[in-house]
Image 1 (cartoon, rainbow, N blue to C red):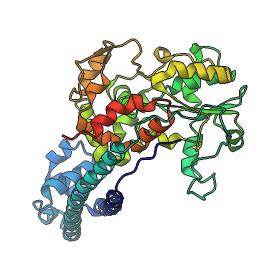
Image 2: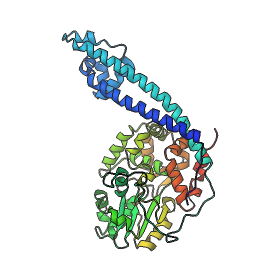
Image 3: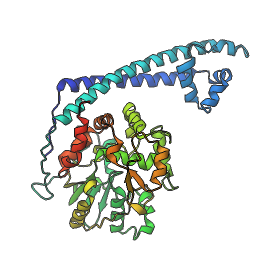
Image 4: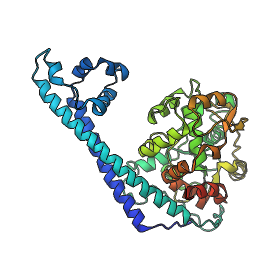
Length: 424
């Protein structure tokens, strides 16, 4: 059923080898940073450079980073240590200097490796998307053929389900509707609040929108057990255009002013992506490109494939055609999925005007002002081709999933794929 994408084995091997080398470099860098923090004479350095302490707001990690970048060959710890005559400072100075120098060289090697890994990854992604069969295969309709629910995260992993972290993550993003014995996988930024509210209401735990906060405090209340997951009469999932999902996160968690209910996730997102209001969408994409692991630090940016519980669902829907999805879900389960976006605590584009005033270079603070005026950006204007190529590489598995499983998914993603493979 899924479209098969072929690309060069040499490209794949090169990308894999560089990825392994890059991983080793990062592990070594972490070890060096740890060692440096252990031996670094922080108090002496702060005495010698009080302006650095002020500039770094007293944060130890930032102070040490400043030493590595600017003072590794300049500061004289022995001279500073003469005030209290401790010979230990000579040893510490030598250790700190050696470690800092090696860490600096390690970072330079990593940047060089990362540059070549970037090229290999982009090349492999372009080849994969270029050779993707754009002739849409109609996904199998629910109820056609032999039905067999199988867990996905056990594939290639012989560990016990209780210790299988990937499976645990996926099953924690399910909700069971008791009356219809149906299970949905809900994915953050894919209309999940509407789904969770509808299921909670259908299961009798809440009765109206006045109790909507309950769903945010009880995400795990209707998680399926293994038995419930494998004996479900109907399993479904709502996917989303990866480019629009990432932009939605950026607007909601990084740009928009938050109320007290969502302040925690707002702060967590800013910390995870080292973000501030002076940065733009371009800056955000550059950050996740240079810090690939960061997208796994927030479930709103985590690849949609990570949420998959089953190897195959009865039906795959898309947020881009949510009305059709809601109609089918109601027909199969009796669940009435309402659009509660404007009643929720998160930012919503519902009722907003699309504007060309917001681009990929607009600062988050300026975007926030326009969001408060009910103005939102046009998704296509928020990406340059280079940004699309990077996001395509980071979320390639989600692009292939959407194209192969969502009915006419190619129609939604063809524009983005064409820009991803365009020669510049």
